[in-house]
Image (tube, rainbow, N blue to C red; front, side, top):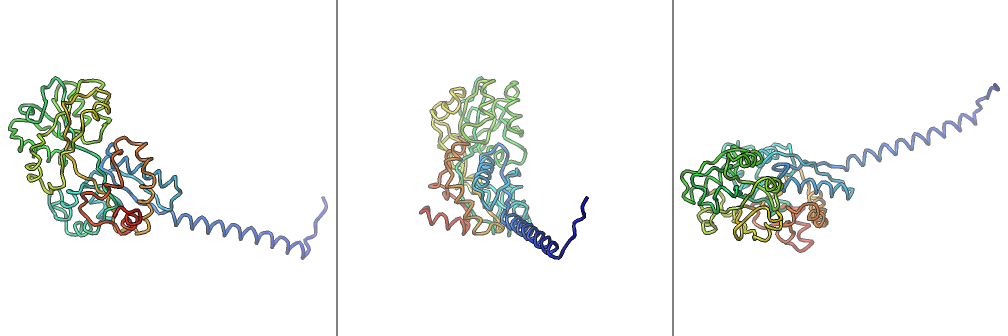
Length: 343
């Protein structure tokens, strides 16, 4: 084959060609690095994968991804107390916690009474992004158990949630203010409790969730269930009997709402009353003002998508986003609320 002679002009041409390629590669690398630096990830700690606040975290994460936001959320499950401790240690950036539970954390009371000072100091630095009015302590019994209200629990058995849980502690307080002396409160997970009810080994259980609740919905297809409630007239005694009780309420849920949610498969006599409190979505100082502003804006500008994806989150509204919060509002979030007239 013929031999090609590499002249000086050829050499210059090759040098210019590869110099341009190297310049393009360098520019692409710089762009990728810049994009990577902008994609700031925050860890969102929810109570449980079945809880409303966790579902919110998943939908919120998808909204940010869909917008191509420079900020992202990764939901994880920790529970309330463990989630707060994880946040205080810098392992998560955003955490869902009840308004009264946050006061327990900063006052070294309740389930936070043994927390060291360094954690308490970190709790005090947290701020609120918003609160959600979903998640309620619901009491449901087998219809054949003869339980129409809380007083009927005498000599009955009731699942009260996992050991050490706040729901069980509050339920035991309700036993006291209703004058119950021989009810059997059984510590077990909600799913296990419903299984025990199906076999006739348990009369009723507490379920923490929204309306409808998937666990109750599934169980109602296999056994006859009925909601029962604490006596609404005991609210003042209830609030006085528990730590930070002023943040607790008996949420009234109309009979027609329940019948519609479960297609008539779960009975109820009139309105049901479920105790609850606002769940604060709180941030550590790791969440900058810019990040807080942008992720809060993205959520509220897409709240219809939240409502479409989760019936349990249909009560989340901008108008009530700051009701009954027990901490300061994050400055970045405050800026958004002031701009839209919510403050």
